[in-house]
Length: 301
Image (cartoon, one colour):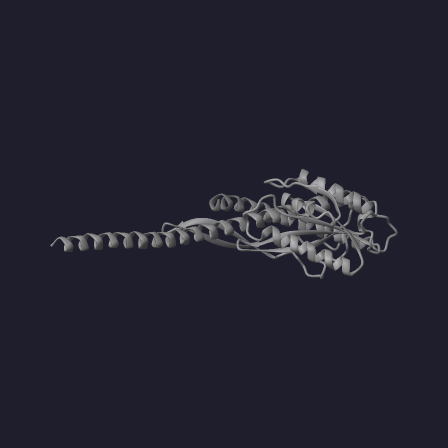
């Protein structure tokens, strides 16, 4: 299972890193357009900031176990956020993505859940669109005033961080930040590949930097910026949710690879200890039988 997870994590990393430039450039364009429209009297539902009374939490978990504390960490993050919202006197509802999260919330009927989504082995735009449609309907109908995305951000092969990303409303800050105002986008990404060195399986690391194009301050739009924003906002929702699904999958596979590696090491150590115990018992039995033979031979002489 370690080798299977290692083979899959490479493809998952490529999907994450390849999607980041498009996602970050799209967000940058949207933020700049939205900032230009702040002084205009326009009505764009997804950018409307209103007093928060109810928060929607999109919680992304995995579909399988055997991945260490991956699922527990994001669920604990969600529980901590729910406690914070309760302390502030705010209502909340959960949109659960992933079989492990679905099972967790189904066993706790006191946590309000709007909808359950099951993940797949390879996140697709169609899957992200289904989640985005539900988020869109909740926010536009004013059932929730804010939507937060909770997922596990892929940092490296041995590290992943559960993060909270404010999905809606779109604010003109120019970067994706968590609820504490801390940017959750990493400038550097690490690629890992499995190789063999001196007959042993090793991991080599390459560090690359994600490049994004700068937004020109003199850029002009042929169409009305409101029309452009209306067309790009659904794409923004889809891309951000798809990116979160890809990050979560890469983190899950890396966690499973690490867990299976630890399980293999523990099994080797257990086999070694059991072999020593067995050999001691066998040697003690042989020694006892030899002593009995010698004692019997002495008795006959």
